[in-house]
Image (cartoon, rainbow, N blue to C red; front, side):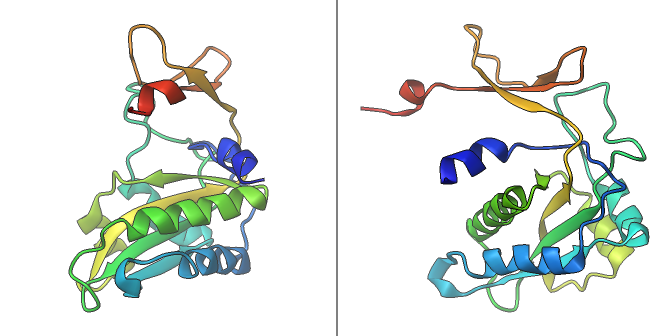
Length: 189
């Protein structure tokens, strides 16, 4: 059921790095994005796939992890993603990309959950450093990086507290808590 996939699709930031994600799996996930909606059906998105440890090591240092967790620099060696999908916008097809990359990212992550994987959409990317590290031509705008792998953490949804604080946190056992507004709070009228 789609609700089950959405509930399991949390932002995982720690992974069993030793559990490989095959290139064919990444291709299958991108195929879900390919089949998803695209504004004016322009289909301007392109993808870089990485499931190779050396290429992953080039990508990792250009990513920002969990802004609200001030004392956590990101996953340690052994807990890093075993794969990445970098979503690019081809400016020769279209100069801007609307919400296409958000739709694509959600399709990919729902597909990953269905395969027993998890991931995180990362918008905090040092784009020029990543462009240089991977030799990405200037015609491609770096939009998002999806970190993927077998999750090594538990993420739970919590009701938003009375103070209205939306910041996620980790408890002493390392469980990641994510406050969410109630349905009644977000529906107007």
